[in-house]
Image 1 (cartoon, rainbow, N blue to C red):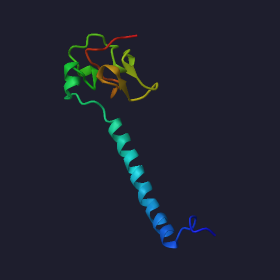
Image 2 (image 1 turned 90 degrees about the vertical axis):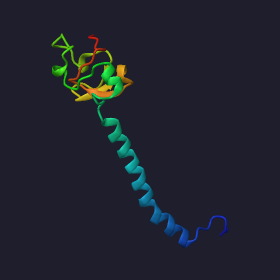
Image 3 (image 1 turned 180 degrees about the vertical axis):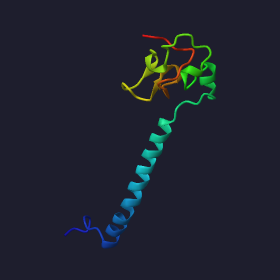
Image 4 (image 1 turned 45 degrees about the vertical axis):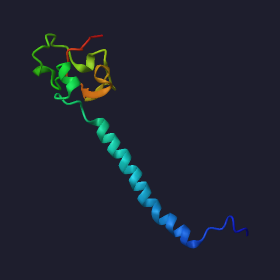
Length: 107
């Protein structure tokens, strides 16, 4: 057998021992990224404040249309029935489906 293709026992043990730690690290990174992506835009965020965003549309004094919610706005994108979705007016960041802001435009 050629020495170029021989792998020593110690090297195999090291690789096998390191595999679970590497996999756990990668899974942790994916979970952290998912959690960060799922956080809704805060009402105190500067961009949200500029648009007078409220996570609960019923608490927005500027809202005059009782049917105006993020989930029926042209800037909102999400699966039907989702509790939150991406808002193009806020840089495709997640907002509450039952929220509202001054950028609201109905279909």
